[in-house]
Image 1 (tube, rainbow, N blue to C red):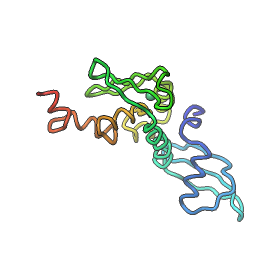
Image 2 (cartoon, rainbow, N blue to C red):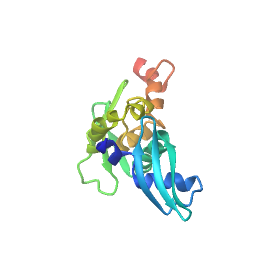
Image 3 (spheres, rainbow, N blue to C red):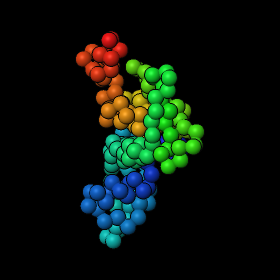
Image 4 (tube, rainbow, N blue to C red):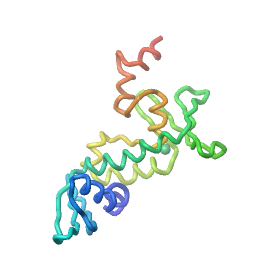
Length: 170
Ligand SMILES: [Zn+2]
């Protein structure tokens, strides 16, 4: 469970979730991953308390950061229309990442994406919530270039009646 803890359930995310609920937290003391929720132990001026937090709350924050950072990237299509080169706009001389977007799979060459394959299935509930898909900031950047807000929306566009389906059929 060490991997997944490091990856999604951080003390700083727990703090952000509790503060958003109006709890005046002095310090998050422990974050423990249960089967389908997360137990957080924290200190307030009144003493030590604990609370169960949903897996989704952590996931939303973890993925939100990737979505925000996606705007820093420039996406260009390669000669193969399913391949995209994703480069940081702050340093376009840097070698980019390769995002491959096919009708049923989207992958990225970055470390973050590879690590998700290693860590996320360790927590079956979270993996199910994510519908067994992984999305890094480079994939988010590519999706926004394709005018899709999410992976779900992207896959829907390949289905009958979707934007990409019509292009593929033409
Ligand atoms: Zn990536």
